[in-house]
Image 1: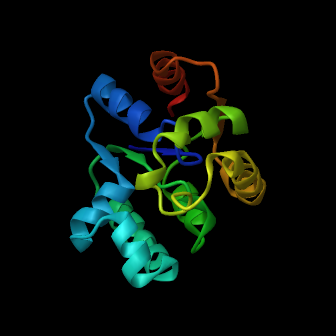
Image 2: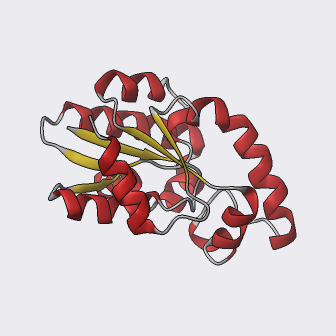
Length: 171
């Protein structure tokens, strides 16, 4: 069984994913960390040195590799993963345990302000421009995110509650 967590950057996919994996005694795989391990480069380095198109190609390839592995796992995707290379079709073709951790713009902006240096898409933005940037991105990405089997409004839920909610919905 593969369990996939998706959502915008800063939505808690990795944090919730680790807790979920621990609760279910499954391995946790962060797609970005997997790509970094395979390429021996950080995500910001890949973006800077090779560009987003190269990164998205590596991302799709890595996602396919994770689904080809027969072992069960909890997988946290990068924020843009569902939006490129027909990745949502690939994901939904392999599992129905797909969870969108949905947060509002204000909550995401608050979380991301302190993480900007590690986030290539927002590192150049002044804090005041962050909410507008997130809003535009969410508008563009919503059709992909909303294809998830389960959409969880995660703004005000504690991580442990999100984990329990996900467990209750697994097929």
